[in-house]
Amino acid sequence: MLPVFQRTPLKAPHYTTQLAAGLGLVPETIRLLTLWQPPHMSGQELLRKALASGEFPKVSARRLRNIVIEAFVPRYLADEAAPARLLKVLAGRVPAADFRQLLFLYTCRANPILADFVCEVYWSRYASGVHTVEKDNAAMFVQRAIARGRTATHWAPSTIIRVSNYLMGVAADFGLLGPMKQRARSILPYRISPLTVSVVAHDLHAKGFGDNALVRHADWNLFGIEPDDVLQELRHLALRGEIIVQSAAATTHIGWKYKSLEELAHGLAEG
Image 1 (tube, one colour):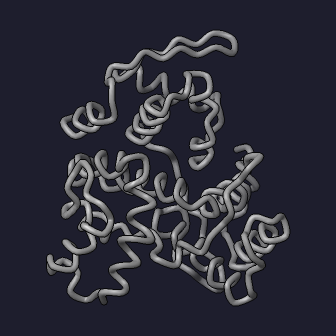
Image 2 (tube, one colour):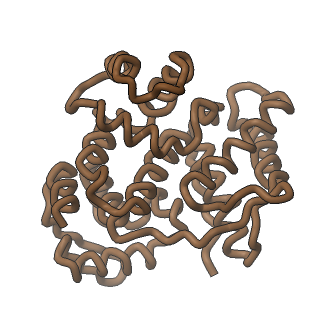
């Protein structure tokens, strides 16, 4: 049985309603990545280019601003635009399902409320053998978060409902949940792909996490795996020649073929 993960750190950031700017935004993100130019195009520059491009003919200027500034920027231009630089290389060159997993990863990093919802509700119900996530489950998650002080202000009932719907909708956009039927969405099988394992591992290494800390990082919780599972996934990468893994007792040592995310991106795109 899968473990139930708790992600909340000692000084957790407040939850926000930022998902209102857009849920998964998968096709919009792909179009914006074609317009974004590395290494340092800002969100405002991207917005101006998107408005002038004609790529979003049915999207109002206000809506496009929300998509770019409130969604694309915090998700993909964080960490000196490392996510956008990686994704721009991989877009159209790796399987669509793998690419969508990476968008899910970066969206969770930018929205802790989504990350915690996935770990505390989706994986908890999955591990219990339940087949659906109900609207009430999402609403209760948000209500508990408010009670624990995870929001900067006390959210109104209407906000709780909206945020609950956002959480369910974005989980569906990224393939964790199915269509809404009678106030519930079916739980879909969700397994981390080898490409995502490689990206997460190399990304955490680039951020300065030691090998042991990397194996225990909370990012893996988003995919329902714990340290022993992570080690197994890393050993699979080693069989493909991407890394070298040595593990004994509680100590793990990883040797890296690719020395940067850029090298990794081009290696994955060419593979």
